[in-house]
Image (cartoon, rainbow, N blue to C red; front, side):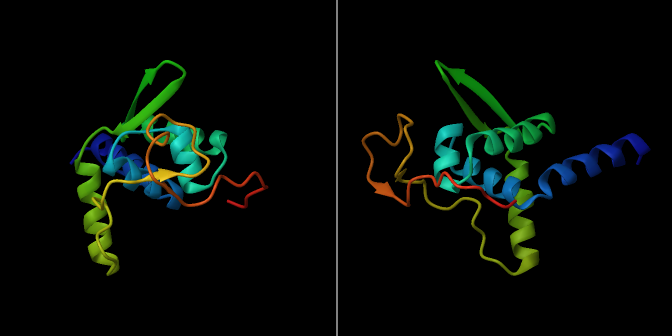
Length: 130
C-alpha cells in the first residue's frame, strides 16, 4: 500500500475520531438533517455544530445541500456507518447506527419538527465545555 493511501486512511479515521463527530455521523445515518435540528438535538451551539460538520465534509464523510436558508447534511458514503457498526461491536456497545428515525425536538425551528411530536429539551444557551 502506498504512503498516500495510508495517509488518506489516517485522515479519514482522524476526522471520525472525535466524540461529537461520531454522534453527528450517527444522527445523519438515520436521515438527512439541518444544522438547526442537530444543534437542538445534541444541545450544542449552531457554530460548534457547523464547525464539526465542516470537518466531516472536508474529509468527504458528509455532504450538504442548501434549501432556502437551511443547509441539510447527510452521510456521503454508507461505508462510514459500517465502520461505526464495527467500532460498536469492538467496544461491546449496542449498534446504534441505524436506530429508529427521530421525533421532533423541542426548541428546533426546522420544518421537520414543526408538526411532529416533541422530545427532549430546548437548546441551552449557556457556555459549554468541549
